[in-house]
Length: 239
Image (cartoon, rainbow, N blue to C red):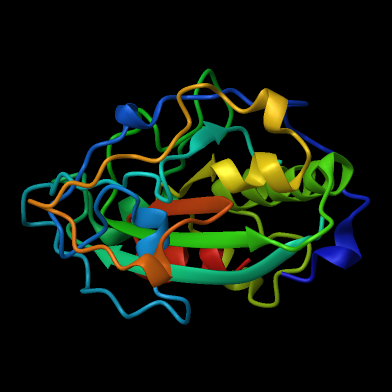
């Protein structure tokens, strides 16, 4: 997203962030992301996911927030390095929901916790990890979070973001949710080490379920996008 063009977007969201322990998120067996999964996102285009099958029962899947865990907070200009995206697909979470019904449904994007923390799991997920560029400070990070917050509010309500080149794909949100996580590197690079939560540290390995590769570990920011329509999810993740 060419965020330089929209740095003047008003916040529309919180002024800070709320840290949430990573253990509120479910783990999944390896093959998908394991502990430290933000790092497992393959850095490129999301792979196609299976078509939704409402007849099947809901699958329980979620993501551990990788690179040693993430402080999950409310979404905060420019400053992102190379992203990597992974798309996971499964069933629609609502057994009785057909495509038209699901497409009309929205999830609240504002509340005590970020959407995606206690939300009924959806059928599809795109996970993108970002590394901050050198020289990023609190001010630039704040601009980024305000832009992301505005984009999240629009897309979750079925409205395109300001820079959306395919606005028609935003019309049916299909229970779209966004969850933003902060990695340890974000606090260090932005000069915010004193504000890093004490519990935010490297997670121990889980050899029974993990298939981690060091080349794909870590990540300063992670964006988890979930929804019931794989096209809606991948479109939102590209924004």
